[in-house]
Length: 561
Image 1 (tube, rainbow, N blue to C red):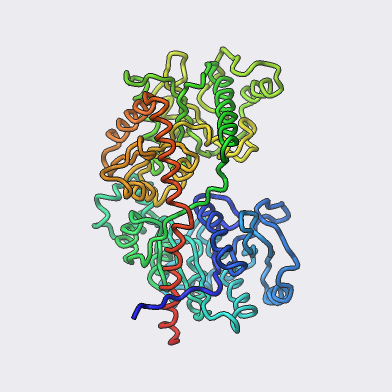
Image 2 (cartoon, rainbow, N blue to C red):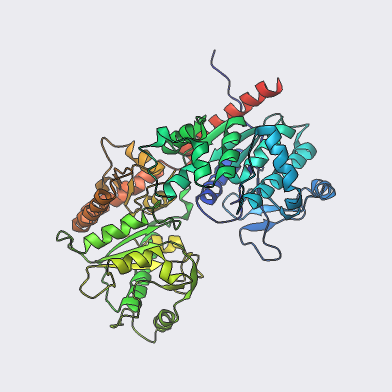
């Protein structure tokens, strides 16, 4: 007899990035929300931190009429919450909770955590307390909402906690509300990221690392202990890719129950004639800024190559990208001018005043586009930095003596700000500039999934990534051998020690793509976009239902149902 699967009646999800656009987890939750909303209208409730304190949050639509009886009850329990909708497609229900009042309880909470799960919080520091107090507050919200609204009507309720910042809450639910099935999803292990970020070889030695020992050595003992014990105790433990699954098994001593690959929705990609128009506008904007900065003219035949993501210099492969651009300067095979963009938010100060003045003259039509013939001082960066002398990107460009001279066929521009339309130079969102690229390069060393390459191919922009990224492994699975740029994604084999070979391979891919005919580039763009369709949430949501089934089944055994 075939096993019957269990589906949830109601889902809670908790994350630091609910209505808080920080990184990839925000993209995971916000793009998947509509798929769940369509399947379970208003049966999914996200819980996030409320730290706006009087400032307007454009991602949150407050609704004080929602659940009036419960909000009154929650207030009597000491919960300081705001209810409403997440301002994203599907507009799912959201509760934002103020977690600051719980700091005075943290010592008792950590003592309880030690008694319940042997989690060692003694060496917690930095954001450890802040994350745990939010996690606890979120769990109290879930407990209160469940007991008031769901306990008598819903048998199959699931709580999914994302990343170590919500672990304490997951274990609180497991202990105090055992009727709720728990799922913990790690999007990147604390100890794996720390090993990689501290320039220790992660992959060749993964099997011989002891997670506890390494967490002590790298001073992340509390976070690792919290993550490790949560993975062990919850009903279902998941991560986002096979590469991180191996990491979990070795460093957390727990094999994942399900892999939950990160999907997306394509509703943010312009269609038809609007796509071509938006792409043309993006390229014009990029070329105008580049001209104002460098004093060089860029025709439409210029190949725009970009990398982006969090400022993790080694983990995201920013170092390899710059190395490859430096080598491309001397590549005789490169037959086109290349404009390379590094779109990585740094410790940014203000938009450069000299650049802003030039851009304003272009925008107000006081000068013709691309009419500047002299470079500004430091023609490699668009904004001032607080730590200009200690910045890794500018430091590497200075080391290579890359100053965007007229004779350089590769010019590199560092854009060290969030591209949200308010940066003061570009005045465009990230997506409104991404569409103008010809080629994207993400040579990651540590990348559990990799949304940036997925977003790139969704915009029909072929990309380069590595075999150490979850996305790269996924893309490779559709090809015989390694995927190539002609197929929309070039997956470069990367390991702990082949930095130089990766840089050389990127240099060669850039030259190859530059030399392609228009028909060949069109074919590669179509292949990229076609591959992106395989990662739509409608294709990946089935893995979440598998996790729900495992969690609910385990819950039944745990409570003796």
